[in-house]
Length: 172
Image 1 (tube, rainbow, N blue to C red):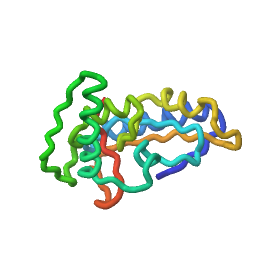
Image 2: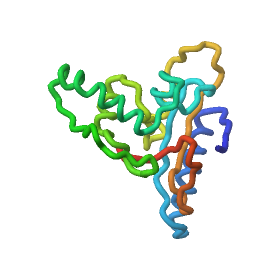
Image 3: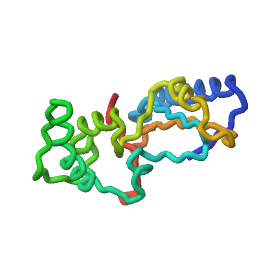
């Protein structure tokens, strides 16, 4: 991760322009698939890139483990909302699969309503990220905000370590 310290809004806009230019230059050079950048804003630079599930529970959850949690709450959600969700109880889950996890739509629904989730929201707009970063601070001792920029594919494919957390773009 590369950190860039900026002193004012003009510096922020200049850095955002540099990021978008870099992506356009890379695409023009035909260096492979280059994805659009994603942004996330934090009102405190000390906050980590943790999902609500990671903040709620210090215990790591596998995809299979979280799917079991989803299965356990489906009946309550259906009874409270009248909305049905199809989550097969005997689903074979491949932990190495690189697409949306099983129960993805249900995860989105639960996440939207405050249920801890392994999903981490990002925006295609640096200004939406800045809005969240500049929100009133919960901790008055915080000196700096953080705005993360992430490009999933930069023309050289994508790599990660099997046992580490990873970011997988799953669409809007």
